[in-house]
Length: 115
Image (cartoon, rainbow, N blue to C red; front, top):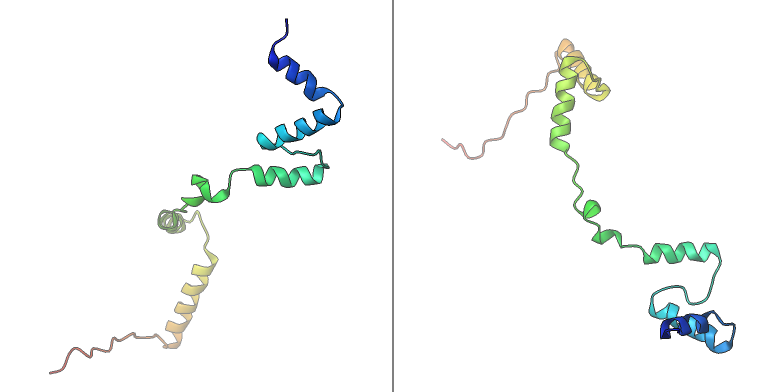
């Protein structure tokens, strides 16, 4: 006793023209590749069948913790466990400027104060 599904499976596996056309139609309906292709083309098919990146929550809502990371690096630098060469350079330039007497004094222009 065979069911309709087994008859359909046998029909699809047959090598007739009708079977090959039905196999292509079935592949199109279920979103598979209709005609067998080379592996290079299958890679493109896999890429396009994958979930788009803009719908991936991990990628869209990614936010690096800049403030916490910066505070951690500053604290590690104070303890001597991290070396920030750029900050060291800026401090050295500031120290050398002070030794030469070239300290910049920042003044605000107060246009609001009119006596």
